[in-house]
Amino acid sequence: MRLWYTGKPCGPARKSHINFCVYDSTREETDAKALDSAPEVKAWVKNDHLGLEILYIYRGVVRKYRPDFLVRLQSGAMLVLEAKGIETEQDRTKFAALKQWTQAVNAHGGFGHWSCAMTRSSAKIHDILKEHAKEARA
Image (cartoon, rainbow, N blue to C red; front, side, top):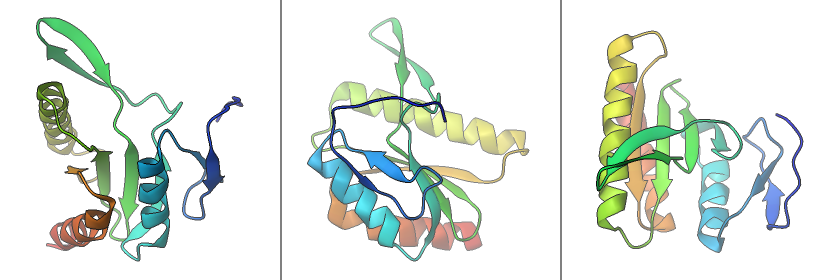
């Protein structure tokens, strides 16, 4: 990764190839710590300065969406995790585009198995990880 500076809070990340995570909110900090401690997670990274953007159309305008986290499960499957508090119409449109993106990646077949999930509560992350780890094994 190229070097960049931030004034935002950050903290260590044990299961990430980037040794620190920049937090845009206290929610992201809680989510990052949950990913770091989850036994289902082999590795994760916050999608910041990585270049993963999903194009979507909202109210006739093409926009870019950057999901919050990329998670490699112990099975090797990938999970794109979006953390949201209050969900808006635009958030539903973004997530629909993300679902289409993961379907297209899986249809290609050359990048492993991908899935996506949205969490509205940090307390639910472990449930989401267990569910996706189970699906990846099936």
